[in-house]
Image (cartoon, rainbow, N blue to C red; front, side, top):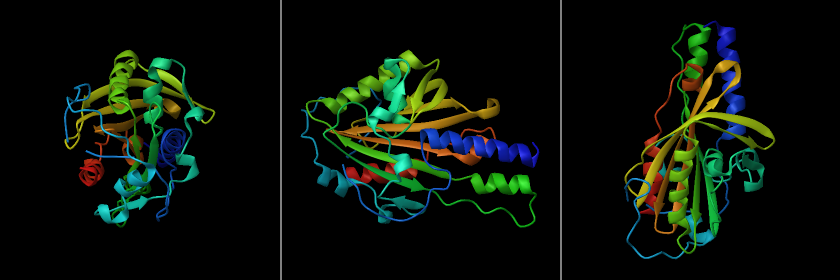
Length: 263
């Protein structure tokens, strides 16, 4: 692939991410915002026998959410940029059955939570080897993970229902769906569900593959984990992997850190 083609793909990936996750040049820092979480592991869809837990307040979620001290590398933003903090009315799946997936890839909570809080984490970019050709240097610089974290608490069994809704959405929308996000039309080619991480009452990982410019495919890794009345959602993307036509694994160190803090 020529450098110009790489740059074109990189821009396409960045535009896609703007429409579905985080800005391509997200900064570092700290701030405040509030509402989300808790964590111990199982497959999504396995109902917990425990009685319904009381929903956490916005203040309790804020205390439970990630801060810089909870991660070993990268940057945590406690004040998520407006471009990464869409309201539910800005996200609409053409098929209502697919709405939970449309929400999750944009870090919009599913259902009607009592309180929510968001965080953004960006990994450290890799440094290209001195003297490497421009194409490889660009790919190396793009090779970093970006994750939006959403914690949401629910009343009256709402958290359990979120996992059921995700199961149903993946089953119905496995072959793809379309959605509108902040006025932008987005096409997803497929949805694949696998077992989620340990550390929550139930969890699931979903890979959504989005159609990007020039026939490129942009996979978004989503993890949803429930502990009691709280659902932690993680939406991750890696620009370098997309540009190289690869699929980056979900950065479990971030979900592990959040679930450990909530446990």
